[in-house]
Length: 69
Image (cartoon, rainbow, N blue to C red; front, side):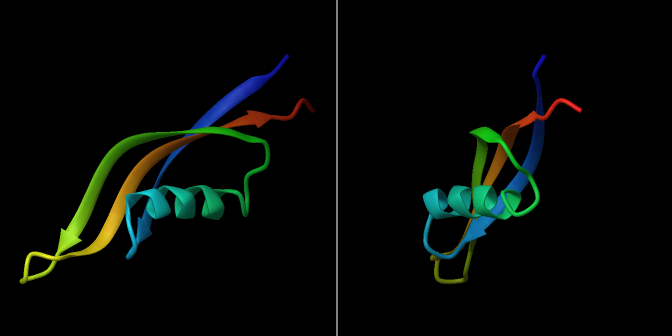
């Protein structure tokens, strides 16, 4: 029997939202094996006084299969 767990994390990037998602998955993969999917829940960002986006943020859910013990 397989069990899928889901965690929610926020990835950040100064280059764009897609990179923020990639960073979230990359960071999760350091401690989580068997990642099977990612779902973007929300896109946000920080804006400076000149109206420029300085940091892109992606709130994501990452699904992974739990190995049988």
